[in-house]
Amino acid sequence: MTMAHDTTTHDTEHGMSNAGYVRIAVILAAITALEVSTYYVDFGPFFMPALMIMMVVKFLMVVSYFMHLKFDNRLFSWLFYAGLILAITVYVIALSTFKFFVS
Amino acid sequence: MSADAAAHHTSTGLSNVKLGMWLFLGSECLLFGGLISTYMLYRGRVGEGPTPSQVFDIPFTSVSSFVLLMSSLTMVLAVSAAHKNDDRNMRLWLAVTGLLGATFVGGQVYEFTAFYNEGMGFTTSLFSSSFFVLTGFHGVHVTVGIIMLMSLVGILKRSKVPGSKSETVEMIGLYWHFVDIVWIIIFTLVYLIPA
Image 1 (cartoon, rainbow over the protein chains, first blue to last red):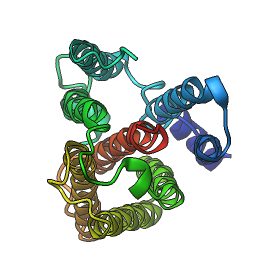
Image 2: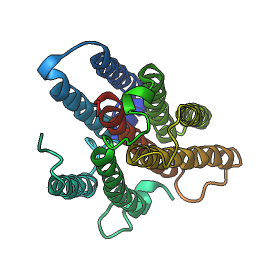
Image 3: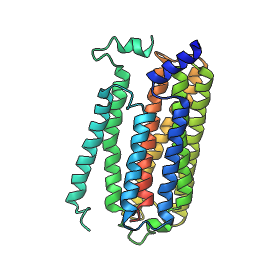
């Protein structure tokens, strides 16, 4: 009872149980398999949006669950996402100046 | 002193080491963002060299990606064991993470060699230069992670970790997961989206 309680307390303090992490890894592996399938199967106009969505979902799952941002203090999220958003903004502007998004 | 106890002595009530690590990872987004943008800009500039679709081996890279993804699972299991003071499992999962990372780097070395043999050297074209710089930088990050993991396993065995053991494992874990999320982006943008 005490040990079970201790384990639960640790899991709650630091995120998820080990079984939870394995479940996340299985989902990530399944999404990766789906991503790879887009190379062999013609998804038509959904090809690019599907790949981008799957990439973002995998990114957020690792950051939120494996890196514990979902369970940690919000200041850590601010520090990381500030860098990420700054990088995306700077480089989207840089690529736009080279007419990267013009087909 | 535990991580929580150390954190209570800071002005934010949070661990300064952890704050520093997240700040570092935020700044790393700018580094990799620059390298990815440069690749996206130059991936069509193949000159007389081979095109991405001619050299990329998607099944091979997919397996490498899967290996790196699974190393994130073993890393988080090491962090979980560290928080539970389960030293044996912590060392085991750290070593497995290092081995999976070494498998990934080995795959990258094989891939680079294959590309070179197919006529794609570092200076062959703008595409090849930007590709090798981007994936090479990532590979160096993975290698640094492996060195940190293996050093930590050795230090833990001698019980000579300065400060909080669980926090040290967690910090290396954050770095390792970051390397994984960078590869998630590289795998999609570089390998799966045709030029």
